[in-house]
Structures are given as structure tokens and as C-alpha cells.
Image (tube, rainbow, N blue to C red):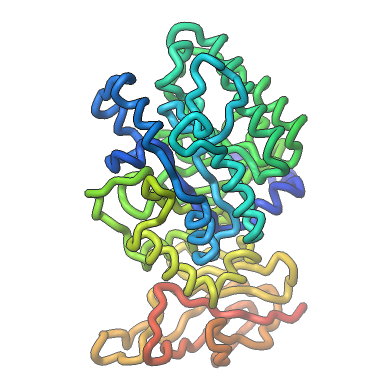
Length: 421
């Protein structure tokens, strides 16, 4: 089927445009499963009976939510998506008498308080946007299997509590519709309520590992890529502009897993962040706190290391928008959303200082084309060192100087100043 070249691209709503500018977020899986340290699915995987699992709530006593938000700040994240309720049905928020006979929430746990109130407060202190993950799958509520219409009422009232009691939030990240394909989830009711109470909240519903990038209902504002790099989105002729987000874990589990030592490298995660921004998608990187709310040294060290890279190149991540991709190259350019005369050239595996020892003598220049004007200057973003270049028409050849001794970035970014033709 041929593409209609006369079809127009939809314009993003202002709140979706703001979401895309956030660029980099931190996902947090936190709940009573954190006490066991075997991942967030431990109850289901190990078939732990409710009478054994649910009393753990009384041992759940987080000290504070500050370490979570501070870790995001150190990493350069501009939003945090926290599990307000995961599949085990335990809520980190005050369910406010939603079920007086079964108040399975933080207020009635060992914590004795509303942890989402604390989380939102810490986010606002650090100018970080709070997002709420909320399960739609629930192992705790018998209605989920036995009386689905009643369960949907319970779910909608749960989300209504989050809409009404925590001020303006960045959005909702739902997860679990993939668990039951035999029922009508009546998403229109849920989304209509959110639009009424939180009109500028992003609505995201995870399509899971098997349906990365799949479009959802018309109310959905972003498609999801769980543990998979996003594809370029073709929005030609679409009725609505929909953004994209990839979620990834630092190790293999989402919730705390003491014996999961399969940590991804900082370099790999930075490359994934850049690959997401290449196609305009956000990158949502997960940590699993300990039960006391602290982030362990390995996860925090990873986030801090990413933060040092963001200190130098974050402007390109936040402000950059898809511009020029090259089929046979990893290099790409982003245009600055606020200054069209600026572009950012991303260089993967850049040259190091000690070329002989590290074998980095190759790749000392890069050629890119389709440059839409005369390039006035090029310089590295990290040290402002100018780069030599030659331009012939729309083809640009840039000589890449090595990184200074004592510095090593997995991706290095140069800023181009482009003059109008």
C-alpha cells in the first residue's frame, strides 16, 4: 500500500509535547514484595498463599521516599513513575475506606502512613514530575476472576482517589490488561474519569513484551516498548499524535531481587537512552528499592554515573527532537526544539585519548548528509572544543578529536550551529 504523501502529520497536544521534553524518567517498583527480595512477581511465581504473603504488610516500614526521588535527581531524570499498586494488590496510598473490611494499603501496614503523599512531596521539592503506575491485574481481589464488573468499579474508584488527592500529576501508567483478553475492560469509563479530573495527565497502558509499540485506544497518549528499543513512528494521516516510551531495568527484575547480579553496564544504558531519543521516544529506567525505601549501592551508582553523562549532554536529550537518521550509521542528529539553528550530532564509541593502548585509532571522522543549511560551527558539548569540518552542499564531513585523557563516554555529542540557507 502506498503512503499518501498529502496526508498531514497530527500536532501533539501541549501536554504530550511536554512529556516528550522530559526525555528520561526513572521507573520504581516498590511494595511489600521488596521485603522478600525475590522480584515483584514472587507471590505468583512461588505460589505463596495469601495468608502467608499478605501479613508481610505489617513488616513493611519504609523510612522515607526521599532516597528514591534523590536518586532520580542525581541521574538527570525529569520524572519518576512509581508503583502506587502492583499486581499483588497492595496500595502505597491511602485507599480511604474503599473497602473498610479489607484495607490492604500503606496506611494500614507497618508504614502507618500514605507513602504517595510523601513521594509527591519529594518530587515537587526536586522539580520532578510524579507519574503513577497502577496495576489493572490484581491477585488480591477475588472479583478480578469471579465478578469482573465489580472489580472494574473497584479499579475505577482506586484511580479516582489518585486523581483527586495528590494535586496535578504527570500521568498514569497502567499495566495488566494483557492478563485477560476474554473481557471488556471498559477503558472508556476509566479514561473519561481521568480526563475530567486530570485533563493534562498522560494516559499510558503497557502492551507488554509481546506487543511492543502496539497502538491502544484513542485515549492513549504513548505506546510502550518493554525491554525493547523503539521503532520510528509513522504518524502520517493518524487522527492523533501519540508519543512513545521504552521501559528498561538495570538488572533482570523490576522489584528488588537480592541475587540478581546481572546488572547492565552504564554504557549500554546510555546507548539505549540515546537510541530512544533518536526516534523521539522517552527512556524509563527502573530501580528496585530495598524495603526501607533506600536504593542499593549498585543501582544508585549506575544512576549517578548516568547523571555525570547527563551533566554534559543532557540538553541534547531534553531538547533534541528527531531530525536526521542514517540507515548504515549509528550516528544521528537531533534538532533543538527551541532553537532550530542548533543540532546535536551523536557519536557512538568515540575515540579515546590513548589510541595505541586502547585500539581506538579508527573512526576519526564522520560524514553525514542532508544538512539543511550552511554549518557555521561544530564543537563538543562536554568541553566546548571546536571541531574541524568540511561541507559540500548538504554533505558534511567532521573530524572527530579524541576525548581528553581521564575521560571516557560511551556516546559523545557535538553541537552544530546551522545557518539558514
